[in-house]
Image 1: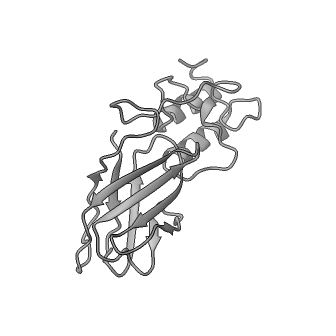
Image 2: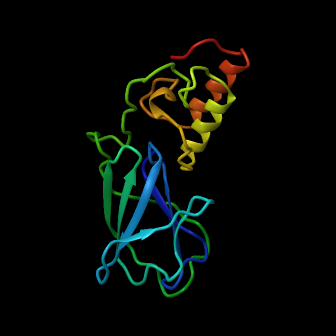
Amino acid sequence: GNLTYAFKDGSSVWWSGIMIRNYPVPITSVEIKTPSTNWKNLPRMDYNYWLDESGFGEGPYSLRITDVLGDVVEAHDIPSLTSGQVPSIVEKPLDVQLPGCSGSSVTPTPSPAGILGDANNDDSVDIVDALLAAQSYVGLNPAGFDLRNADVNCDGIVDIIDALPIAQDYVGLVSGFC
């Protein structure tokens, strides 16, 4: 799907959290900037939000997102949080062009570097590979994950749809990919 963001419920100009969704590869950093501040790196929480304990302040905001491939995208003119708190999570689209794309919201996955399905390059396809693909999809940036081997349905992106066939291959329900 298209790249979206959501402010964490309870966010305000004094305490803020943001989640980036539908990015095609794991994200390594998110930075925020307001008209009156420089870029500020946001720490990632284990529940997949990027937080600023002192708040984003008054917007509009700009986001700079860096992924595991070193690609950087920026989104600008994100409407400001109000002085009140965000009551619930509402996803909103980010108007950005992802690297390597022409009118598409998907960055093609590089060609496999080893065994298709072997997401950790240990020379076997097993349940750990399915877990790594799922963790990558939710943005956890698992250690040892090689996205080049994880696109087992060959649609050009690594997402949760790739984790299931990897698990099915491991238990013998399917044989091979693509």
